[in-house]
Amino acid sequence: MGLLMLVSLSFAGSPLTVSIPVDPDGVQRAVVEADSYAFTPHHLVVTAGQRVELTFQSMTWVVPHNVIIDDPQSGLNIREEIPAGESRTITFTPTVPGSFAIYCDKKLPFMKSHREKGQEGVLEVR
Ligand SMILES: [Cu+2]
Image (tube, rainbow, N blue to C red):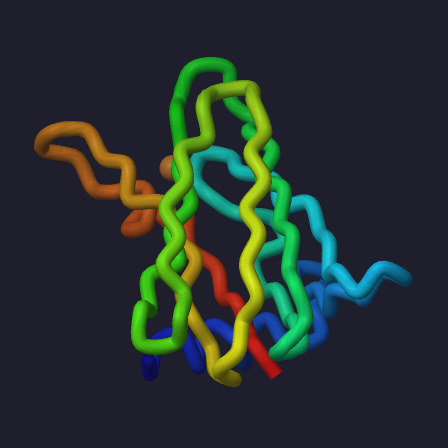
């Protein structure tokens, strides 16, 4: 959690931070690029109680990624594969305010995971 707070503070107000607007139909939509090894933007700010629809667009030719938000206590239990060059959309409704890690846990044997290489972001629920 300490690291997450540090990440949030470091990038607060930068273009990498996006406050996702609520569309007229009540859904908060954003597109996130998944590349090796980053999510862009990587700090997403959303409002609790409103549906969120995130589309992850793979920017790679070969390397598969995934997206994980793993905080079952807050009702967030997401794991979606993002095949190379394809896009995948996840939808959920956050209910508990807080900062939650968004990351890719792909890794090759004996190598660091993508998360360890920097493919990690923050979902900030307000
Ligand atoms: Cu990855």
